[in-house]
Image (cartoon, rainbow, N blue to C red; front, side, top):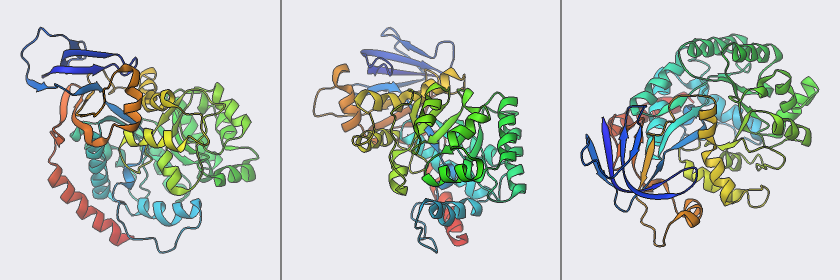
Length: 418
């Protein structure tokens, strides 16, 4: 299968150099992308006159399990703090999920990601009453749509030690045959025994942790009260920060020592600005940290352009973020995937933007358009692994109308259980 993008304006995602050229895109990994004006035929030809072509996007931290929450009934008790938000909303949802609901959540998420220009998703899943096989269900849904993935199951003690052990088993079973991470909820719901077992599993499979860190001050207070140290210090004691595969989500409430530890570590931090604003837990600040900072959506949506723009706007008061670093965080996920040799983020993952700007766009002002102009609606075509998965904003591998009917049925089932 080959796709010829005619008359394209190609933007190099690393240098932001503009190139006016035809682009031949192949599934073949040896010659995934060829810039040439000499080829006139291919299996699929798309006229990209006036369109922008660049590397597709990726989500650094997502939650499939939240996909059916949109429009759900209010919780029985109004949460007064972050812990109660988890207890009365998200932990009720994840406990209610069964296999069909997980499948619907994954399909809905994969579709939304694809239509937003994402060809790779790093997800952090929880379904304590349907653990076994949950990661395979999600992987299958993403594969059907054509979106690459790096998954983990959220290991936690909060639902009892039996469920915690099941989470460890699901993780190991999945890692035997798939690229993946060792997921944990957060320090305040993982005791020392589970933390040690998870770290041993990580080292056994040469993987990394994917865990929420200091999203709220409650996480730090619990760690100090129960372990006599702060969250980053606790994780460091288990050696998980030595892995460049480790992902630390949020990292809002850090002291100077924790920032110094992270600055020297190989771990990546993933910022989730809209989720932080929604939960009123604080603002991210990159001061004292290294550049291993990427962006996620935390299950709020699947639009990485929106996440980058929110990170820039929300960071003007407290963060040292500018045009360059906002785009850098948006693209950092590719570096994370590439240095760790994860499959699925190759050169033949492209997005074609139909961006009819009222002003000129070129290398010198691209970042201004990125932050103040680009929208999800501008994503017209998406190519994943050399295959067209979105054409004229229509999914090519699945029937979106049929899937949305299924997801709405499962959403009603979920809401009735709540």
